[in-house]
Length: 258
Length: 153
Image: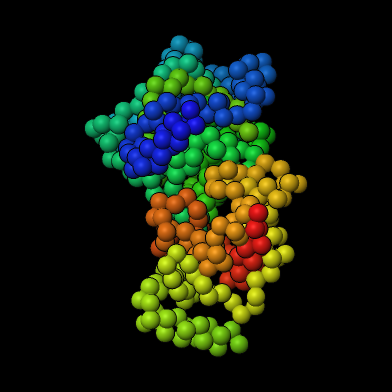
């Protein structure tokens, strides 16, 4: 038995990151798998999940008038639960009009500036986190399916390259930890697959809801790389690659993370 | 004093490069690699194991325990296991072998996950405050080497 395990490990080393990086993990595992039992329990029960406070606030913001037009999200879209079902599972996507890659945060702000004539909401503001959470929540349990062909292909290619690019003073690529070291310990933390289906998430360390870009920035800081602004094209491209990399994993946002 | 010393080291490095033909310029001081080792200390001050231990255990300086366990340090909770445990490393590897692995493990394995602790070039997208700086300075490398050499079992 021990001998067989040894062979498996040995073959794993030989086939290594080059192959794995081109593909999704053989068995995609949601981020919640790598959390403490306490955090998992918080996530699985909406009445104890602190992220639900943001979802609730987002629900009320959905129907609130704003901007020069006085429109709310609901004015154009209608009922949140009905119309936003499954939408976040298809993001990020390439916006037809601007030809740019857009995540949910970007779509919300695009609606605000174009249709509500309201100023964009800053990343990590309570309002943007709340709206993003409420919209993403409507896809909970849905299989994530993002487009990576056609107009999305260059963004996808860029995202994959970033995932594999060594960077920072510590000279580490995402793939080295989140593919090659999954399940191992970084001090008390378990290295996850870097799956993003639970984001935006409530992070206990932050005592707050946070965006995926905030989480990615933490990794940039960790490897002592340049930390990019929220919504940076590189982070968006990475967001697309990560969304694809999760394969058929169901959406689990709002997650609870350490 | 420092510039005299570093000129001195450059001289030695150039001389050794002529002899061995293996010195490379991708670390931030002249370092001569012989086989899989850097046998010459980076500083004149001999490495101090006690200082090295502080660096290894500190989350702010070396932060080695994020990836490595040192079972000898039983009081340190939640030690990492991304890299091999460091107990007995002083018995498994020579001083020079340990030094090269700290300076730049990628010399031995291009796909290593071990960060280079004494290299500043050939890096991508480094945060502005760390550009041109190695994770550890020469003296810190020597101190860590001395501590690791002392871990005989």
